[in-house]
Amino acid sequence: MADTPPSPVWNVPNLLSLSRLPLAVVLFALIARAAWPAALAVFAAACATDWLDGWWARRYGPLTAVGRALDPLTDKVLVCGAFVFLIPVPAAGIDPWVVAVVVGRELLVTGLRGMVEAAGKAFGADRFGKLKMGLQCAVVVAVLVVEWVRDAGPADALAVLEPVRTGLLWAMLAATVGSGAQYAVKAVRLLR
Image 1 (tube, rainbow, N blue to C red):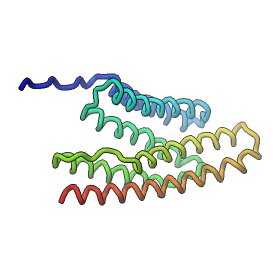
Image 2 (cartoon, rainbow, N blue to C red):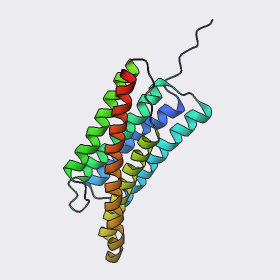
Image 3 (cartoon, rainbow, N blue to C red):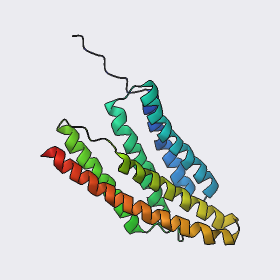
Image 4 (cartoon, helix red, strand yellow):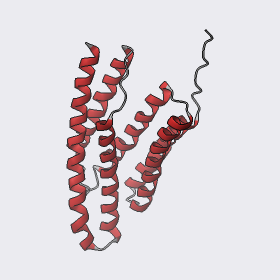
């Protein structure tokens, strides 16, 4: 039986995943400068690459081990970094304890994934993890929109937008904690 050649590391899905790193740096700089419309546009572009890399890999290939690790890593840099940079924004509602919960969950799951995959078992993302990621992105979008409206929009719009942002924040925290607990239980079962 002939050996199959390794998949190239520099393929379209991996390059799309890697593109989130410079986009994240630009996003952080824009948040620090309170350039809310531009930050929203950059974050939307980064989220689009997240969807596109997975779609491309499933449709055209290749699905690689590097891609399976790179995609969630760049997601974590983008989202966790955005939350860190939003802490000093006074009315954003992103308190340090919120960021600690998000970052702690991501570190826990990354460590568990490494242990389980080192044991030769699959430990990919599931629907609950994807829901958590979707809610984390929705919170970042909501915060950026609220801050943009606070600076330039009609003040009465904040009466609607702020409760939406707060509701998304609590839903995201519940999904973050819940999915972290689910992954921990799954890892224990797989490592037995």
